[in-house]
Image (cartoon, rainbow, N blue to C red):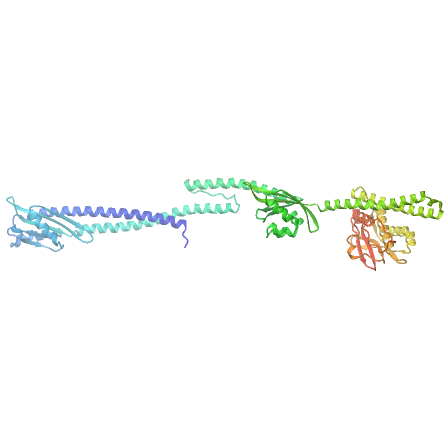
Length: 585
């Protein structure tokens, strides 16, 4: 059973009042009993003196004379006393006993009185009620008899009983009043305490706007005022902390780097959205498992363990298809490492660029060295006498011209890539007719097709809409597609230039019936200097820059190249050009 503060306060109030009433009542009854016993004893002693005066003249006749006995009987009846009269020699001369049982006390009183001493005894208790007095009767200076008067104290006991009953009633009324007042005041106190409890719970939940009201200017009222002051100050402090926390949360969430905070036991404390996006599964595992388990199998596991050993660590590792640079800094508390703050930066693009730059320089050097070496060799041969033979000389000069053209194309492609990388190439966008672009490319590629023993066909809607593009760059891209198709198509096969409506614009491209592209190489053909595997040394090969340049130009137009290829059945390269009406708005 749950007892409330109201119950305990009321009980305490009632117990205190009850204890006070009991103590006071006992003291009062005890004092009253002693006082009544003393008064009754004095009264009975006075009655004994009166009776002695009454019987002293006729003491000798009282034993036999009824006229002498009648005053004694009337005296005993009027006071409701028991009377014993003793004559000479201590013989009982007369008695009137109706109210008491004196027992041995009567003999004590008789002996004392016959010896000339007054006797007094008062006993009004729960076990015995008797008040007795004895007086000696003297004649000529000698004791000739004695009178004994006894009373049962019924009147006195009635007074005590009535007083006790009234005290009981008064006690009951006092307890009722005490309980009522105790309940009232305890209710007031309990309500104020309940208000303090409610305010404390509200503060625990983060509500610092609640204000309490004190009912009286007492200690609880002062406590209520102190509580309100504390709530106001804590509210200000927590508002400032909340504002700082929101600012920190905003800063953390808007960071480009991934931020992860780990406790000393390796469990996750905090992570921003950039970290989840960057790290992926390992960080999601860290939500339920320690860092050593979440990053197991990666280079970051050892680095994080070193950081938890209070070391500053910088580590680069590959997570999935990304390259991540991690800075780990331990957090200290009283000289002890209590966690680690990890900053993750995605350096995939930077790493790829650095790798691409190295590969580009290496490949470009190789591609430039080949025609230069060929030209140098031919020149040396011509200088050593090969020029004297017209047939050999003309063959060498033709080969040298081909190598120079190849070198020129390579330099032009490298220059174009450089412009695209540095964003120094600007598209001259204008409204263009798709049919005109397709037919222009077919016209330019016609002689090349005849030389490679292939045919050029076009599939163009004569009513095709205008598109928004840089005509020269699109022609360059399509010529590159046609050139690749010629290199990888068998003699007599058709190469189709097409333009057809598509979602968002017009799809243009080149389709051939050549050898196709191996499935494993589809995702590599747009890499710089990448060339398909050749089947023979006599097969014509380019520098591997055409498709990468085409990709950059198409993406600059806001589109992307789609490649569809089936081995031994042919390939299709295409992209979408936006409609001029949509692009100009």
